[in-house]
Image (tube, rainbow, N blue to C red):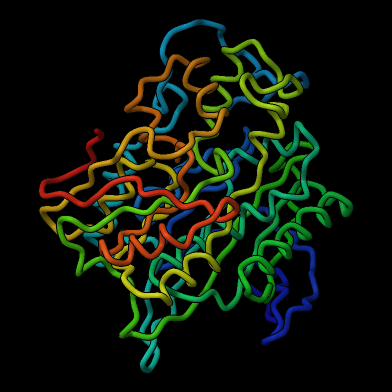
Length: 402
């Protein structure tokens, strides 16, 4: 163990999956890394997290009442946007540009560090205000899966196999039973990723969080051979976009989700319109961990680029893997859009362009593959292993739909 600058005990153990957890008593602690910047919970509420480049862009949101409606939110039928809900994607993009001037190389889904003939690939993230739905619903068992997914899904886009994961659990008063459920989810996520939960920290900070609240962040580190890195450099016009289905909203866009819920007049306990589960169950569905599926597809050859569809949706994430002068043409109606997105769009009167720039719309990971590889992938799919041909690479810039 090591003693940190804030006299806080780290709970890290060398190379094993069993780790001691020590409570941290501190009024403030700040950490940054060379490839990611995070903003976490504040005294006035939790934060919404939006992934733009390597930035976790967050905003404070109003608390939800016990019936699942945002306190003080107005009930109107005006079309909603992510910016209306408090998240400014353009401001986040500007911050990425400014940071890139100070730390060249920023902007990928993960940061690469050379190590012999390989790269260590690292990523860090949180789960945004999805934690607030965990507080309201009492569903704490799966939020840890979300936490692991957000980081391991980022680093696998480089072709990296996750090695280990570290977590940070912060709360005002430690509820051991709740914390155990959260950590169990993290363990489950690591098992799904075939990586080790190497350690982490538990921070108990009275006065910073409201009763029953907590926040989470985590970091994943993986490895890939230098000659096997997936970087998009060989992508050409005519390559095919293969989409892997999501389980729903995953862990982005929850500021807008909460605003829509308030406007809809429904509660978390109500049945999802057009679905066979409650709104709470639909929204809390854990983020899909794509590691094993993606690494399997990479091993078969022909994968040139991979985009994790998080905050920014198709609009901002797919172009990040393209060389200059190339864009994407997405085939509308080429995959099944989950009912939760149809309800969000209808209840919030949200424009198509806003939906596509905020949510994953049912596709959580996009692989750019050669035409030959796409044929093999599509021929080998089955009912239980759904993959979709959702578009192609074209000359130009940005994302268009046809």
